[in-house]
Each structure stands twice: as structure tokens, then as C-alpha cells.
Amino acid sequence: MKNVNVSSWAAWKSLVLAKGMLPQYIESSDRYDLFAIEANISWEFNILKDGGADVTEFEVSYKSTYNKPLEVKAGPGRPTRVAASPQPINTVQRWKGYKLTLPTGQTSAYLDISFGVLIYLKGGIIVPDGEADGSCRLSLDVLYGANDMVILPGILDGCYIMSDQPVNFVSPEAMAVAPELKIRLTISTESPLEEDRTVFITAEYFK
Image (cartoon, rainbow, N blue to C red; front, side, top):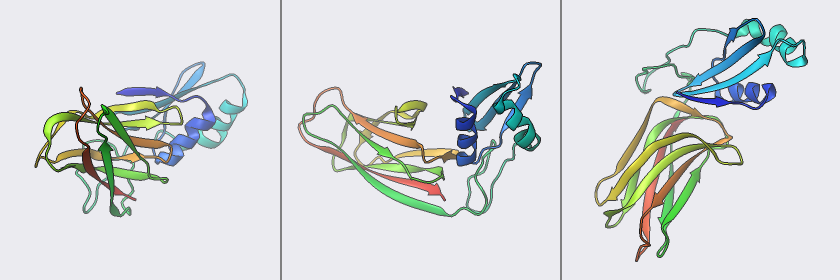
């Protein structure tokens, strides 16, 4: 589990709302430990019982609505759930295509995929264009915010591009991807290439 501490109560509320998560809390004598689970990420924030505006707002407007059971949601056409998922039943399956080229003479290039709205990522497929000899490697990570903080590394890592061998990636829980998150596909090689190497990626998601 990747624990991510959010910077403020306002940011934590916004993140939970944007990603449609089920917020939880643990109460102790001096604070509330808030957390919301998304796949293998735990988004966390602590509110001190100091009489301030944050704890007052939480106790008056939010506390009674938190700690609901984590539901395992599925439905027709959705993946079988093995853990809690925030994906609503009434979402519609969609696809979107992208292209990434590693230019001649360079050793790496990347493509950032974002959706501008909350989506639920089911997975995708990456297909090489033309001959591929295994000299190029693919990686896929999830980044957060303007500073590109990596919050979910290694969705793909160490996958080499071979001719006629598409690379698949799957999110069994249809991971929620909020507008402030982006999925970074990177193609890299140890030595500069003598010709361009291109891959096509199709993302499959619910919206």
C-alpha cells in the first residue's frame, strides 16, 4: 500500500470528491486520522482536535457521513472486483488512442495521458509500429499535480517492445483517475536509435 499524505483538509476533501472515494476515519484522543483507499493507494490527512475551523467543520458536516462500508462494485461489462472500487454502475465504456515516438538519436521520450474529467481506467494495449527488436523498454506510471509527483509507479515496468507482441495492461478495480492525475507512458533505450521507434496505445476506460 502506497500512503500519500495530502497537504491540507481542503485539498483532501477536494481529492476525495473528485475521485469518488469512500472516506474513512480513526478517532483518537487528540486527532482524527482520515484516509480514503484507491486500489493500492491510501490518501491520508490528520485533523487535530484543537478547536480550529478544520475540526469544527469535520465534526459538524462530515463525520456522520464517513466510515461507510467499502463496497465491491461490479455490473454488466465491468471487471470482476477483488477489492473496493469507487466506479459507479451507470458509467459507459470508452476508448481513446494515442501515439508516442522515440526519435532517432534520443534515448527516451514520454507521453502524458490525462482526461480532464474523472474516469475509471480499465486498462489498455500498446502496439509497436513496424519491426521491433527488444531494444526499447516501456514503463507506465501515474503522476499527481504540476510537480509530477509519482504516486503509482510501475503499472508497466521493464516491458520490451517486440514485433507482433502487443503489451497489455489491466486495472482490475477500474482505477479512478481524477483530472489532476496523469498517466505517463515512457519509451526508453540504453543507446540512441538509428531510426524512429513508434508505439500506439489504446486506453480503455469508463466515464
